Each structure stands twice: as structure tokens, then as C-alpha cells.
Image: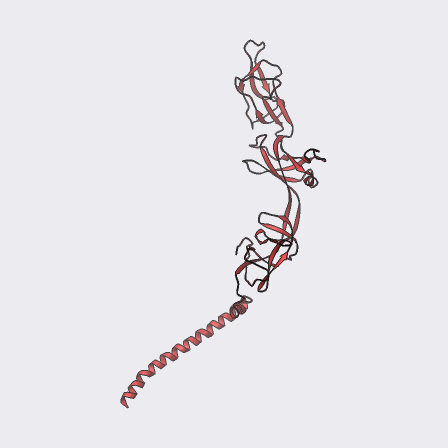
Length: 320
């Protein structure tokens, strides 16, 4: 009997420790459930997500279709030319260049000396000072010390009167109909940054041979610009506002462009009509409503009706 009582005495503390651990676990579990219920009140759907792990399938990032405004633009290409070109040559033959006083990109005043010319050996007359007939920007120059100064060949200097330079571009008839004088434009010469400008002239008819018409875009500044440079111009012709989605959301469906829309636990392919483009978004003109949840990156692994885990992201540039 004494042996039994000793065993019971050693067992009672063990039972007490087990009971205490069980009570601690119950308290921890009740606290966790209380915290989960509180979080569910702050974040809608959290309690349901904890109880329901959701459908099996890949996790995809979705974003809400939002209203954006897109600039309607027309792109043209051409070369930079003076709005009014003034060619400068000597008045008589038999001269050579003795000194060059102006270089390309120099701004000159009317009457400013451009070069000193001297008679060729054996030619009559004295030295001649070649002057700028108008104020403006020296666009080109063929003047080289010791070289002849002809009266009929390439001019020694070409001056853009008043420093005005413009883009002489060509555009097809479809684009000409959308262009008008006064429209703002951006011109980017090769190797240089963009320069603001405005459409100055649009020819009403196209060339019969090329079916292209002439467009002149006057630049707001001619600093550091050389005549003859190739340049691209972008003319803003209007604006359109509508529902927008990331470029990466578009897929090529059997009926044309489409996007995948999250419909509860599955996705559906929605044919859409597209409009204007920006750097990373496209305007959707039909087939989609604002706030529809669109799959950000429509990969080839997705199919109509697939079960997915949709995770909403605020940044449209996020990827799956």
C-alpha cells in the first residue's frame, strides 16, 4: 500500500502539469479566434478566406479597369529646314575665301561680316567683306579658307531668317485630314532631345505620284539644331477618355482582341474593342466596364473557365 501511495504521489504533479498545459492551449486558441474575428471586421472577406481556402488553380494578379484620358496623336517624319532660307554668295567671280568669320549655328545680325574674300591671283579688284543680308541663324556653310568663292554653285552660307527652323514632313492623306495649323507638336531630331513646336502649314492636296502631302511644323527653338537633320514629329490632335487596361492584359482571341476577367473563382475571356494607346496602357472602347477585375498578364496558360486564385494589385504594371 505504501508503494501504491508513493506512485500516486509521483503521478499527481504530472497530471497537474498536463492540465495546466491544456488550459493554456485553450486560452491561446480562444485569443486567436477572437483576434481573427476582429480582423475579419476590419478586412472584409478575411474570415471567409480563412474558412475557405478557395479554388485550386494558379494565382493571378488582377487590377481594376479604370478611366483614363489618352492623347490622340499623329506621327510624321521629315528633315529640318529654314522657314525662310537666305543664300549668301559673292557678287562677282574671281574671289577666294581669306577669312571665315561665322560658323554653323551662329546667330548673326543683319549686316554682320560672315567672311573676308580676296581676289584670286591675277584678278582685278580689292578684298570683299561678305555680310549677312538678314538677321538669323547660320544653318550651313561651305566657306573654307583658301577655297574659291563662286557666284553660281553652292552658297558660302545659308541663313535661317529670324532663326526660324521647321520640320518639313510628309504624311498620307488619312493623316492630313486630322492635321490643322496651330496644333501643338513635339519634334525629336536624331541625337537630340525633343523640341516643342506648332503645325504651321498643311497642304490641302497630296502629290499624285506618292499620295503624300506636305506638313510644316515650326520649332519653338532652334538652339543646337543643324539644318538637314532627320527628325520625327508627334502632333497632338485631340483627346479621348475611356476605360483603360495594361497592354499586357490583351490577348489575341478568335474574334479579335480580348482580356481575361475574374468572375468569382474562375476567369472568362471578354472580347473588347480597342482605341488609343499610351506608353503602357490601351483604351478599351467596348466589352469592358470600369472596375471590372482584369488579369494583368494574360499568359498562354490561361483558358476560359479556368479556376484561379485572383490577387488584386493596385499597380497595373504588377505581373503574375
